[in-house]
Image (cartoon, rainbow, N blue to C red; front, top):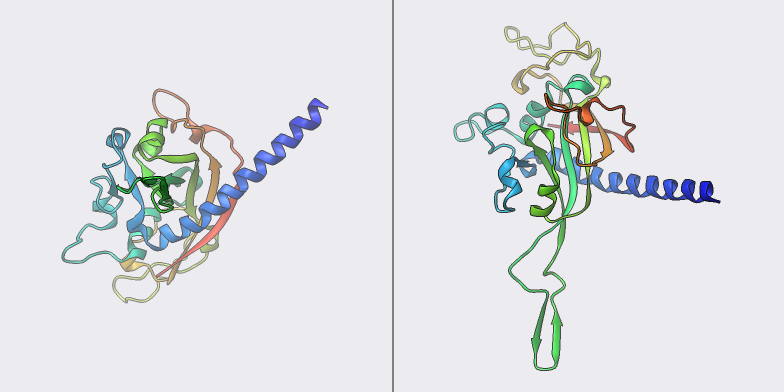
Length: 238
């Protein structure tokens, strides 16, 4: 009986995790189509939810994804592409976090006038947010300051092997696609020398247990053998 119950609970948990990952896929696709909505969280995010900086504004990524925002602003595709162009293997993958958070506006949940209680149904809405974190780690303190509902999903993005064999680089001299095909390893060229109109990526969703990325002090989630609850192929179009 205990074994049956344990197996049932595990199946229910697997289904719930998969459903959460499926909900995150839609938001992730939207974030890759509009990467200016991806939040960058560093140590200041542990102290206040007001410390919201987006990836293209952060000192860490601004020079990579949008180096000349005034004279030559990057397109949405440029930002997503530059963020992922070096993710040729899972070891070089880009880690994002997808979660639901409550937004706390100025309006109160209820107002009372005499004996009448009015409920403001829009006073405490929730939204799905996608974040990239300093050192790839999303600690419990972020959960508090970002008003996270439930547990975040940890997502690893890497370039799809569907790109292998494609002539994806433009020759700087002839301005034609290079004869050299991508072999599956190595950083892709900058977006202005990328010949294709799309970038195929693989998104692997994992439950986040608040462990850190592997570093010099401890072994973290990047060194563990984990089975993703969902693997999704995503096409980012120009």
